[in-house]
Length: 210
Image (tube, rainbow, N blue to C red; front, side, top):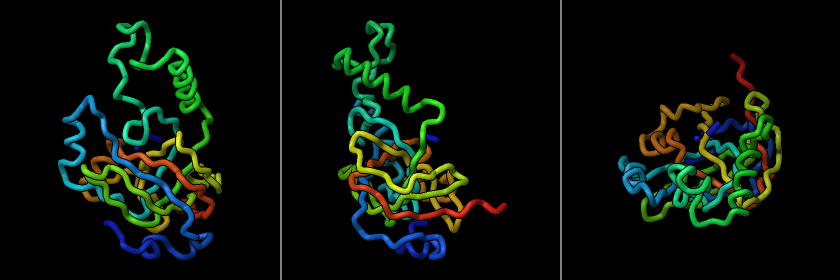
């Protein structure tokens, strides 16, 4: 990762900072990750209770995912030591697929890789029984944070991670002021999102004046 719930988005985001009115057409899907190879880690994700992702949470990315939002890095098939598996990083995939994934990973980590971000309009609750949910969102634009793109297309093969929470005209990337279930998971990088409908409504974050 670059990684108090409010019931009304208007209370969280100043009207002067909102460039356009949301249409309700935009949507993202958010999931808590699940690693079937580490059930104890999954248990810890919910050891503080259900995860409430608050309105105003910013997601940054994108990166390519290989096994869905619950396991974007495909940890289910990731090997511990590629040297013990003829150099393969994932079990049960073809050499061609491994090459494709390696190329995507290089793209995702390349210097100058563009970062996009969106901010969710409403809170969403993730539980052990329901790891995923959908919510409306806006593209977030900020020169301070190097987010310039004003449209994010739907892309089911790309994912974003929780990056911070907007408060006033600033982003708190520490998550230290959030409720523990969300704080722990946001800091651990276990909350992932994908854009499932094109986002073209913009929220402009003013630069930090300090």
